[in-house]
Image 1 (cartoon, one colour):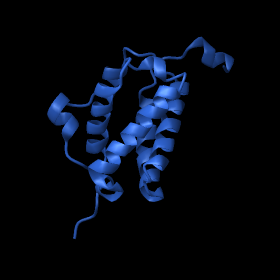
Image 2 (tube, helix red, strand yellow):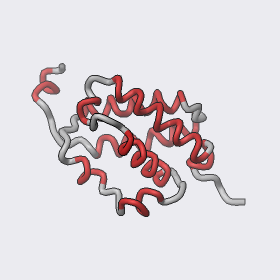
Image 3 (tube, rainbow, N blue to C red):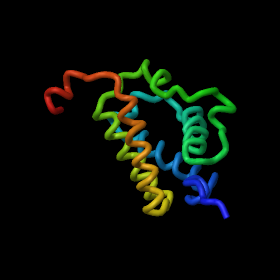
Length: 132
């Protein structure tokens, strides 16, 4: 018997879709993150679903549809600070709770996503130095 992937352990597609929906509800309400996203989330939700599915051991949807993720390069046009990474992770952690992702899988996912979120940081805004 083979070990389950995180994707399988959390319930596969249904849970991943629930996670993505909840996450973008939270992003929409976050005054720091919302300006970084387009007016509607339809396209970004689908890309996020593809990416998270692939990242956590599901079908390679992202690569099949968009090529290699190259996340840092794709995010360079947006000013992303440490505060943005922290807010993104808070939204994701809360969405994981909403999606009923079990604690062991949630911890593994957050560990991997924390590295990814901080890898996206590409600027330091003056406000960060002032502690705002």
